[in-house]
Amino acid sequence: MRVGFVGWRGMVGSVLLQRMQEERDFDHVDPVFFSTSRAGGAGPPIGTADVPLRDANDPKAFAGLDAIVTCQGGDWTHAMHPALRAAGWSGHWIDAASALRMNDDAVIILDPLNRGVIDEARARGAKDWIGGNCTVSLMMMAFAGLLERDLVEWMTCMTYQAASGAGAQNMRELLAQMGEAHLAAKALLESPGASILDIDREVAGILRDERFPTEHFGVPLAGSLIPWIDKDLGNGMSREEWKGSAELNKILGRGVVPPEHAARASPQGGPRPPGAAKPPIPVESICVRIGAMRCHSQAVTIKLTEDLPQAEIESLIAGANEWVRLVPNTRDASIRHLTPAAVTGKLEIAVGRVRKLALGPGYVGAFTVGDQLLWGAAEPLRRMLRILVGR
Ligand code: HSE
Image 1 (cartoon, protein in one colour):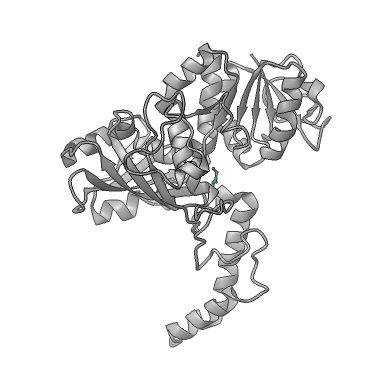
Image 2 (cartoon, protein in one colour):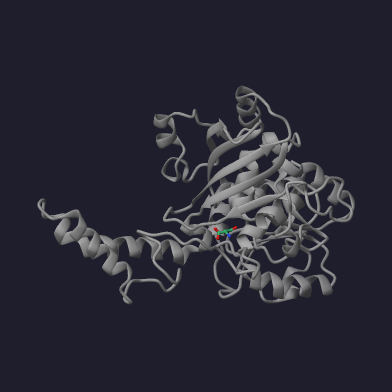
C-alpha cells in the first residue's frame, strides 16, 4: 500500500510517526512524504531514503497513492480533499482534522469502540476516515465498557483540557506564562518573611498586565483557567461541547446530532436521526482549558440504564480494552496515578474516582485522564491504516 503523509512534521504528525515506528507500521506500508512548504527537501529517514518531499499543494503529486494520512489541519483538508476527489483520486483519506468529520460519507474512527461501524462502512465503499475530537475519543475509551453494553442513558462531562489541544504554540505560551508568573513573585518568594498575600498580589498583577504573553490563548491560562473552548455556537454552547454529543453518537452509529438539537437533547434521548438504529445518547459538557501540557481530564456523571452494583461497574470499565487502567478510589492512588503528570506520554487511559452517587439509583461519578496526542489524536489514525492494510 502506497501511503502519502502530509503534516508529519507538526505535533500530532510527529507523535504519529513515532508511534508508527514503535509499532513497525512502516514494515507494511510504502510511505511517500509531502510538504506544503518544503517540497524538494529531504523527508524523514523512513522508507526509501533520499526521495525528495513531494508538493502537498499539487493534486497531481498524489496520483497513484492508495491512501493519504494527513495531520496538516483543516484548511489543507478543505482545499485538497475536494480537489483530489474531483480529479478522480479514490484512495483512502485518513485525517486528524475535524473538517470532514460530520460529512455523511465520513466515518469517525475509534476502532476499539466502533470496529463494526468501520467494517460496515468499508463494505459500502467508504473512503474517508476521520479521527475524532480528542476529548470525545478519550472519554469513550475510558467508558467503553458501559457504552458498548448500551448501559449509558445520558452523561455529563466536565473537562479539564490541556494546552496541547489548542496547539504547539499554546503549549509554549503556557510555559512562558508560568515563567512570567514566577518571575513576578521571585524576589518575594526568596524572602522567607514575605507575606503570601503580597506574593499573590504580584502574581495577580502580572496576570492582568497587558505585557503578559497571551498572543495565542488571548487571556492568562497559567494561574487561571479558560472556561470556553472552540467557537461560540450562539446557543450557550461551545463547539467543543457540541462535539461531545454529536461525535459520540456518530462514532457509535447512533446518528448525527445537529447543534440545534444538541441544545434540546433530553434525558429521554432527543430526536432519532434518520437511519440510526438507536436514539442518540444525550451528552452534556462544560469544556474548560487548564494548565496541563498534553493530558485531557474529565469528571463525568453517568446515568446508567440499570442500577448495577459498584463492583460490576468497575469490572465493566476496567475490562473494556487493554488501555483502560482502573485507579482505586483512594486519596493516595488518585493523586499519584489519576493525573496528567502520571499519564502524560502513555497510551493508558486512567479511570478512577468511580463511585455510585447519592443522587439516585444508577448515578455514577468518575474521573478520567488520557494523553490527547496519543489516543486523542495519533493512535486511531495509525490503527485505521493497519485495518486497511489488513495486518
Ligand atoms: N479541540 C481539542 C482541544 C483538541 O481544544 O483541546 C483536539 O480535538
